[in-house]
Length: 200
Image (cartoon, rainbow, N blue to C red):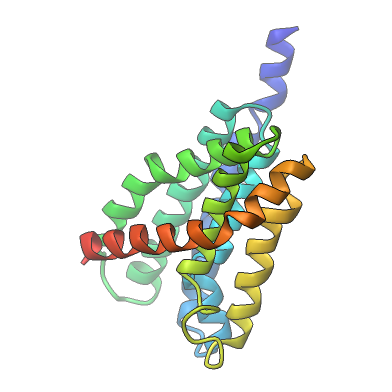
C-alpha cells in the first residue's frame, strides 16, 4: 500500500512548482501595476503566509508540507525576480538569494508547523498557529497604516482569522490561537525587524 500512497502524492510537487512561477509573475506585475491595493497584496506577507499555510495544512505529512511549500516558494521567488529582470528591465536583485534561503528554511518550517498544529489540540498547536497569524498582522497594514491601505488591512484581518480560527480542527486549539495572537504578533514584529535589518 505504501507505494500507492507515494504515487498519489508525487503529482503535487510538479503542481507546486508550476503554481510558484505564476504567483511570482502575478505578484511582480501587481507591484508595478500602479494600483496601490494590488501592489500591497503582492508585497505584504498576508497572501504569502496564507498560501504557505494552506499548502502545508493540506499536506498529508509534515515532510510533504515542507517539501511542497519549499518548491512553491522557491519557484515563486525566481519568477518574481526574473519578471523584474527580464520583463521590466530592472536587472537581477541580490535579494533573490535571501528569498531562496528562506524558501529552504523558514518557509518549510512554517508549513510543517501548520500541518502539525492544525491536527492537534492544546496550547502548543495554538501558539504555532498564532505565530503564523502574528506574522501577517505584524508585517501588514492593519496595525500600521490601515487608513492608507484599507484593502490590505482587510486582507490582513481575514488571513489572520483564517489562520487562527478556521484552519485548526480542534476548538481548544482555536481558543489558544486567539488568546495568544497578541503576544505572537509582538514576537513576530521583533523577528520581522531583525529579518529586515539582515536583508538591508
